[in-house]
Length: 393
Image (cartoon, rainbow, N blue to C red; front, side, top):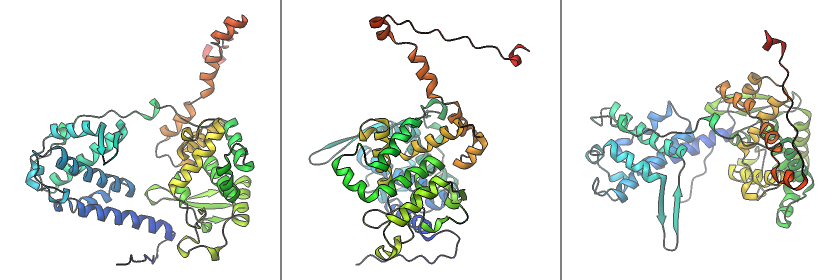
C-alpha cells in the first residue's frame, strides 16, 4: 500500500513546517505506543501536559527499551516475547531493586549481531532520563489506580553534573575569525570538501553567522523559512521551545549574508518540491536541511577554526555558548543576553559570564618550566592588585 501524502490545513499562526514537525513526532509516538502494553494507552496523553514533544518521544523509546530488557534479561519476571504482551500482573511483581539493577545495566551493555558486538556506554545524564521515564510510568499507573503501589521512592539517586561544574566549550574570537575565513575562501578544506563548498559556501556562511550572532538552538535554525524574514522591517521570527514565538532584529552582517545566499546560491522556487519551497536552508537535493547535516557542517568548520580533527569539531550548541560568552564579554547586560538566548533562568546565563578561559591561560603562561630550564628565563611575578577605594572603606 502506497504511503499517503500528508497535507497541512493550517488555521494557526505557526508555519506549516512547524506543524508538520510536531505531527511527525506525534505519529512516531503513536507507533511506539502500539509496541507497549495496552495498560499504557494513556501514558502519552499524560506526558503532553508536562514535557516537550521530543522528550515525550525519548520517554517512549526508553520504555520500549525497558520492556525489551525485561524480556531478554529477566525471564523470571515475564514469559512474554514482545513488550506489548507483558501482563499487568507481571509488571506488579517488579520491585525498586529491579529498577536499580536495570539502570545499572544501562550504564554499559552489549548489542550483538552476526559479525559485530556493539558496546553502548551511557553517561549519568542519559541514565537520569531513563530512570525518569520509568519513574513517570510507575507514578502514572499508580495515580490512575492501575498499579496498587508506587515503588519509585526506592529508586537509587543519579548524580548529574550541575551546569556550573561543566567546562564551557566555545570558540575563542581568533578561532571564530579563522572559521569564517575558511567558509568564505575554502581554505584548509580537503579536495572532496571543497567540491561541496563550491555549491554551498554562501549557505554555510549564513548558517554560521546566525548561530554566532543569535545563539540559536539547532532546531530553531533548522525550521527557519524564507518567509520568516522581513528585511524591510529588519527582523525575523523564530519558534522557541514550548511553542513560543520570538522576533529577532537583523544586523547588517546577517542581512548581507542571508540575502547573498538567497539571491545567488539558493535554488529557484520552481526547482524545489512544494513541501520545501519555503525552507530557508536547503540540501543539494533541494530539501530542507536536516539537523544532522547542519551539525556535521558545523563540526567541519569549527574544527578548522580550532585547528583540530573533524571529529573533534564543535556542535551548534557550542556556537550558542560562543555567542553567549562573546556578548557578555563585550559588555552587554546579562539580562539582555538571557532574553536573546531564551534562557529560562538568569543563572544559566551567569555561567557564561563567570567563564573566562583567559584566566587559565594567564596562569599556565607563568609556569613555563621547560623554557625556564633551557633559556634561564625567569617568569614575571604578577603585580599585586591595588586595593580600590571601596575595599578600603
